[in-house]
Image (cartoon, rainbow, N blue to C red):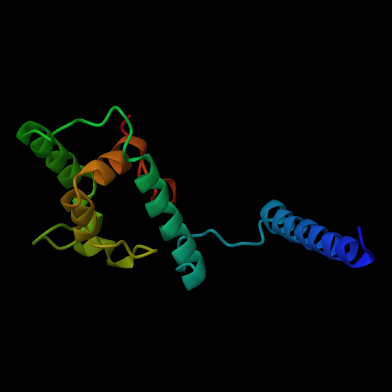
Length: 141
């Protein structure tokens, strides 16, 4: 191996070690504010949202999803949504409750979830079954 190749290899390795050390410092010291009273930086929000969407999509084709959503399943799911989510997220034709205006971070409208259902239901089913951690949604598995 030439000196140049060894130097590049050590440089890359050193950079990786430095990045890992920096990440550990942030993680272990609590330097990043995870409080919900301020929105995330746009790049952080993008990273969390993209990770959540890709995670749900990659797990949505598992073997235990129902082949068809029956009317009874839709009614049961709508009842759970109305009881546990509608006040914060609203719904199609339904606004969020007034008391949620001061909640941080501001919740997205429920129509976004309706988009997951419209794309076949498996994404919504996966999110319902497993929950979504960064959104504070518990799973129902």
